[in-house]
Image (cartoon, rainbow, N blue to C red; front, side, top):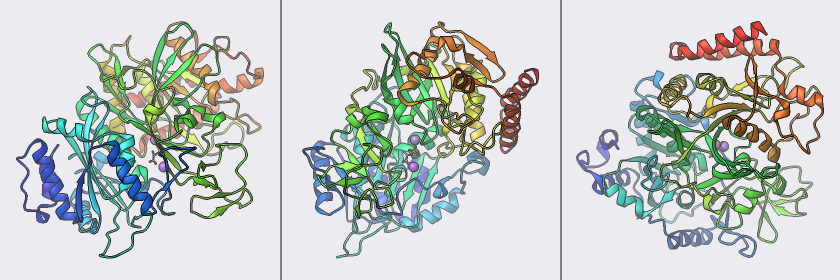
Length: 615
Ligand code: PEP
Ligand code: NA
Ligand code: MN
């Protein structure tokens, strides 16, 4: 890591010159420098042990910052209630700070490094007064793995320490690798709520002023004012996506907002699949799918982030850099995701869900019938006719991946797993069929670049308002999005054409003229995975269409589904006029990237229009 740049920013706060230091000495010098800036009462180096997390949870329960759930129902599990104004990622206060604005690109909030470092120096000065500063060393990916990276988070939030202990491989073993000279990414987090002597703390300290700042050029993260997951667990979105995507571009790999699964067919053949969906499109549900079709199994590798790297064998290899799930609770229930419900049996931190009278938790969708009385996420009495939800819509569970009953045997493989198929999905009411295969890698990159969701279906035959979320990375790409597309194209060039993953687009959310979903979704999505596997195995045919390769309906396993001919037709319909309209919208979207747009994507758009003209 590049200590030199950090030193520049805070020369005045410390007399330590650590630019020449290596390994542990460099880490210790950096910790001292951050302490000199933030002025904590004490410093604790976290070892990641069970006794450490037990000590922290006991302390937080005693301080009224965590509620211990009834161990009879939910052993070693806790409920945290956040400040009502600190419940989600704050994209408006999330910045990519690069020397040149065009390197952050039009989809990110850019800020000049000098300018933001001056502001950060002001807010971080004394921000940890009266608090403990924790040093949290962590590994993203299995320790020492080929695709793994190290980081260190400094934080004054015990909630963040406990959550990082679940979400990453955290603790003393990481320090050995740092001692040996392995590079690491520096991340600093403060809730921005210093305590004056004798001042009583609040259950969820935070600050109305927030900064989540990524410096991809120096590989640092500075986060201030929020205790919420995506803003405060810096290993996750800040490092494993924003910083890592920029690292991957320099080093020839990819950091993506993708789930990873291992799919096994009735003959025992396995396929590894990576899938990108925007937030709130059911990534966690697909990652933990229990197929409705006999003989098939899905095993979970990851539910949110994948790091992918071309191997010497011409294949694309992937790892889940995380060690836990930070999932949305509402909508997670027996019928939608029984696997997640089983995963949460214990050792779980819940945030902003409702508390039952028996000391267990509840949220909308966990069961069909809500309990007669609850304490809601704000700590207030709640009954089914309160007229508001009991859990916050973005309430979360934090739990170790190893607790997932269908975690794949190879989920921690040090070299990762070889990817057979990549899926792109969005929430589309119109146009996008249930599944379509890209004709080649370049077409697949075009599909990834044009991922979008529709809020509402407009009148029949027209497209609703499109919210673009290219590669599902809109809030997470640490550099110019158009350069991200160029990087994907160049990764394709390094793969062997016959070993590169096949690429697909799926859409579980297409609606009929009556405004109802056409496809049942959830466990039935396994039928689509089945077709994708058959394509990879060379055992299913496809029909060319202007937008890619469509399944022949007789190749889909639809046994036991009650779908009319008309529904099937609508699921796969390619409305040429509506696709022409979509091509116009895509041209407009592409034009916002100016000359950074890769020529290959303009060519793909032109080719789509040509095929539509012939249709
Ligand atoms: C988060 O908000 O911290 C998070 C994990 O993001 P999302 O679920 O939106 O991907
Ligand atoms: Na969020
Ligand atoms: Mn996500």
